[in-house]
Structure formats: C-alpha cells, structure tokens
Image 1 (cartoon, rainbow, N blue to C red):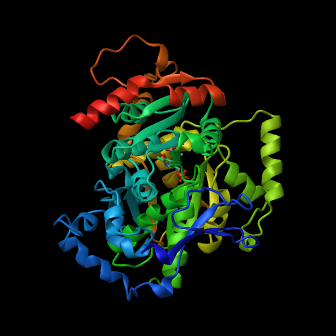
Image 2 (cartoon, rainbow, N blue to C red; image 1 turned 90 degrees about the vertical axis):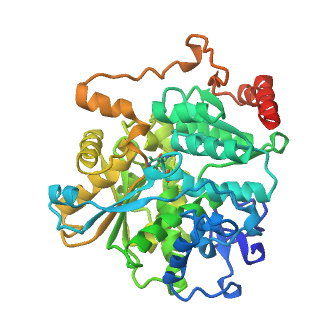
Image 3 (cartoon, rainbow, N blue to C red; image 1 turned 135 degrees about the vertical axis):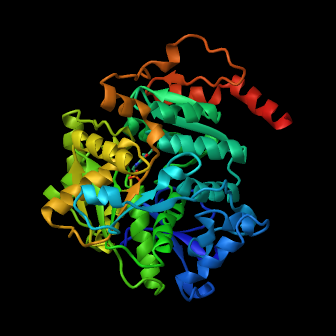
Length: 482
Ligand code: F0G
C-alpha cells in the first residue's frame, strides 16, 4: 500500500516530499506542517461511498473483520498509508454515533431533524482522540517505534496511554501543572503511562515535547496532532457522519478548536472526497474557540488572516505571538481541553476554512457551561470543550449565518465524565478540584500505582525524568513476563 502514499510539505513554494516511513513532524526544508498525500490514480477506484456499507456484516469476524469493526479502518481505502493490514493497530475505536437531537433542537429554535450531535465521547478512551491515535500508532508500528509521547490537555494523554498499554509501547505524557481534568489524569495513570507534570501550561508542554522528540538519542515518537498521521484517522469522523446520513453532507459541521487538528482533518477529508467524486456538496465549517483561548478567532476575524492558497501571512501570526509573549498572555478557559494559545495546526485550519467556506467564533466560559448543561439535559452529555460547538451554533443561529432550516452536525469531542468537577460545580457550587499538587500528596500504596512526577519546565530535568525511571522499567519487564 505504502508506495502510493507519501508525506509532503503543505507550503506550496516548498512542497518537499518524504517517504511514508520517514519520521518528521515538520518539513525538514522549511519547517512547515506535513500532509499525507495519496496517488489516488494508482489505487483501486472507489465508485461510491455505499461501498463501505458491506463492512457492517463482516465486522469482528476475524481477519479483515478486525478492521471492519473499527470506525476508522472500515474506511481504510480512504487512508491507505499502511504497508500491510498487519501494521494496523486497532482497539475497536470509532464506533460512535450521530444522534438526531430533536429536544435540543427545539430548545434552540431549530426544526426537528436539523440538529445532529456526533458523540465522539463514545470512543474507548472517551474522546475523539482515539480516531487519530489508531492511525498514528499504526505508523509508529511501521517505523518500529518503542516509546511514544505527547503533550496534552488530557484527552490526548488518555488516548495515548490506552493505546500504548495495549500495543506494549512505553507511553510518556506531559501535562501542565493543575491544567488537566481529573477524569483524564486518572486515565493516563491507570493505563500506566509515565506522567510528567510540567510546571507550565499546554503550550509549554508542547514546546518541550517537540524538543525531546527531536533528540534521536531518546527514540521518542511524537503523538500530538502536529503528527500528520493523527489527522488521517480523524478524517473518519466526517465519514461516519456521512454514513449515518446515507452519504449526504449536512449543511454545517461545527467543532471546538484547540490545537486545530480536528478541523484540519475535516477539511482534508472533504477535499479528498470531492476530488474522488464521492461527495457532491462540501458542508460549511464553524470552528469555535473558547474566548480565553481565541488565537484563531482573533487572527481570522480581526486580522483577516486567510489560507490564500498556502501563501498565508506568517508575519501576522509571528507578530501576534510576540505580543502575547511580551504581555505574558496565556490561555485561560474553563474548557481545559481547548486551553491552548499557540495552536500548532493553525495553517492547516486556515486551509480547512478555505475548503469548507468556514467561519470562526468564540464562546465565553459562561456560554460553554450553559450549553454543556443543555446537552446533558437534552442528550447524552459531553465535556465543557465539546459544548463550545453548541454554544457556537446558538450564536450563528442568532446572527442568521445558520438558518433554522439548515442541517447542522455538532461534534461532541469528549465524554461528559471526563470532567465531573465542572458538572458538580455547575450544579452545586462546590469545587472538588484538588489536582494542583498531585505529586506531593500522601504515599499511595496500590500494587500498580503509577504516580505522576512533578518536573520543572527545564529540558535537562525533563530528559532526566524520562531516562531515569528504573521503577517503570521494572514494571514493563514484569508485564512482559505476565
Ligand atoms: N475537544 C476536546 C474534548 C479536546 O480534548 C480537544 C483537544 C479539542 C476539543 C480540540 O481539538 O486540538 O483538534 O482543535 N485536546 C488536546 C489534548 C489538545 O491534549 O487532549 P483540536
């Protein structure tokens, strides 16, 4: 398969290409992001999307049925970067549902059947991240990685830790000090990842993990969404929405924006489907930032930043970050999952907004909390960041950008139980959060206990923490024997 796929710099004036088994997360020539590109002409023709439906009858029946069970790999012809099907690492991810949310629609003044909620919280680790992790772990396996790592606001770390444990790779996660919802932290610890609690926020963690991953001595494979293979998996969220609608596009897709991987993947999915003649209509995209983490919204709406066929104005972005640094401005929102000031996929998000004729809005914390509660009252519930999509929908309806008769799919990115503290606080006023200083609490006693390590925001200290962990090495050995 892999001779038909390669990696390519998204910067049109560079366009450098790399083999599918290269491990670079950015272009070595110019530092831009990379795409996975397919030579569709050399691949078997997919005549129409109905082709994928037969897989429901073969799911879980052994052999290829293993792949048909996955909500990502049942669409494997649309992400054919793997060498052989043996490479594919799958844990049964992506079996999520599109709910016709008529009660919520009524509450928002929309007609029945017009509001659809895509519950990505129904993934094994409770968030949409599993869609991307299965693809990136597949690539990690292709290239023989032994250690995988990410910086995270919580869900990426939970997903990475789960996949790493099942794929028997060492998982390492960097989380900001006190910046992670307890449900997510508990997952990373439970699945056995080495959990480094860095003094700083997500942006600090991402900067550090990119430095660590660039050191070949450490042999660490980076799992953040700057890794283009992650986005290949996340395209499948769009395939599943189409599948649930008899392959008809909705009018709108609304998604919260943090590191901007998801919206970037959606744009790529529709660009490819259109190129392949598999969809007639590309839906419009709305990306919703939290007001306290609104980099994309400010750059897009106030500075008029656009993709401009790849010639976007990088100077505007640099200036924006310089002003942020000068004023020591960092992201702050109750929606901790999207508390990100320097979204790594910003250029790809601009491209997705161009492909999908998109808009960007920002929702206040109060709006996010109210809409989160609303989703729970009228549906299956979601975590705060996910509800930014519904808060954005209400805003766009009020503005008349979205008409009441249009069909809208809101992506609910994470499960309600990820962040129970926010829910309890909303309903009772009691703040249960006590995650500020986890590393210095009482000695835990459980046989499988996996304590987070507090680490300064300092590269040497971080490398020491990753390297010198004999207790963990011992645990890995004992697991191999069992
Ligand atoms: N919703 C949830 C629940 C998330 O966890 C994230 C990102 C997003 C939305 C934003 O998605 O980054 O693709 O724009 N969480 C990352 C993490 C950053 O580390 O778990 P994006």
